[in-house]
Length: 195
Image (cartoon, rainbow, N blue to C red; front, side, top):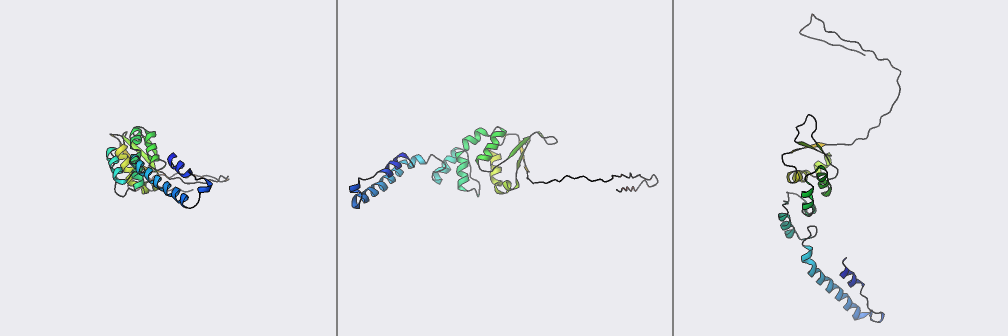
């Protein structure tokens, strides 16, 4: 609540006028001036992507190079438009890319670069399977818009499992029987081993 609306709500009549028509007039004045305040401040509220009307939101999105993908909820679209400048600034680093995912409500994500046995230009994006299922279009849009140039992105699914290991002692014997290849059977080899 703004200061003006707080002052308007705190207005009180003296005790001898706090009944009947003067009280009704005060209520009517409060309602009228609250509505006038809303009319005056409406244009200022249109600059905020989180509260503006949808046609103005589309203009702001066009200005910030944000395109709404099919099936995107309005609340997520508002967030993407509101954080467009911050996301563009953070797009160059691994930490910034992780912050983009957090700002848009995707959750925990890992980015891993230059892994052995994988091409140097591939960046691994590790997310859970539920994140991919819930935010497929959004994740593709984030990578398309804020991903590094000349880099490829590959999604990997990470899953957390709880594991309980019990330790014990076994007084057993370990025996190995080696297997040999008969020289007479060159075309068919049979190996056998037993414990």
